[in-house]
Image 1 (cartoon, rainbow, N blue to C red):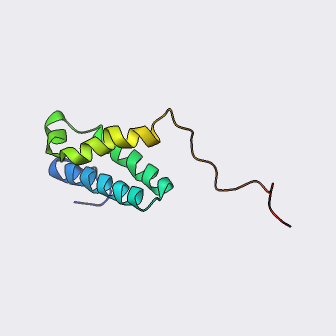
Image 2 (cartoon, rainbow, N blue to C red):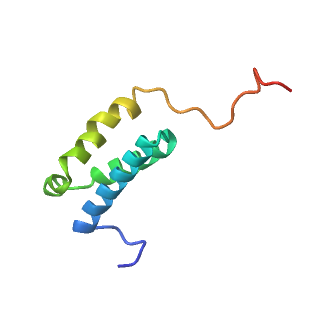
Image 3 (cartoon, helix red, strand yellow):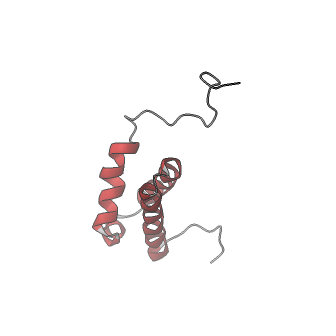
Length: 92
C-alpha cells in the first residue's frame, strides 16, 4: 500500500489506536502541545470510523479520547498561547 493512500479497515483502526496511545504518552510526559496535536489527529480519524470499527478500539482508549481529554483540551478551554512571549518582565 503506498504511504499516501487513505487507510481502510483494520489499518485505520490500528492507526487510531496508535495515535491515541501516542497522545496519552505525550500527556503523561506533560507535553501538552504535542498531546493536543495528536489528540486532534486521532479524533479526526476516529470520527471516520464505523460503529463496528469503533467497537474494535479498546474501551480505555475510547474513554480517554472522548471524555477525559475533552475535559482538558475541549473547545471550552482557553486556547494555547503562541510560542513567542512578551518582553514584559524580562531583564535586559
